[in-house]
Length: 135
Image (cartoon, rainbow, N blue to C red):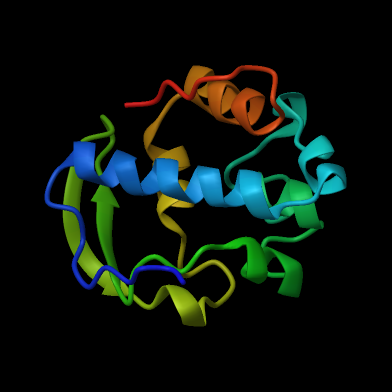
């Protein structure tokens, strides 16, 4: 059973820990066929078909994507600034996501980091690297 955390992580380090948990959940729950669809070359964090869940399932709002999206928080309180600083902010209910309005911790993290980190995550999910080095 997934542990529900009722408040946002207070620090970026705690937030990254939640992101890593979501990545591990994907790695354990996604099929080999879904993982094989991940492609750094066509990854686009802003596109519903080319984002992390979109690549695996065809659309980030698909039923399968919602199953893969691990419910970690009752409400997630996360924002980011232009320079990638972490700051808790407005809440959203992760279990009732609507198109374009809410994101998982991993999806929010992907908006905060650069392409090198995107590649690290995709490579890790595909088993091309054994360790996940994100901060």
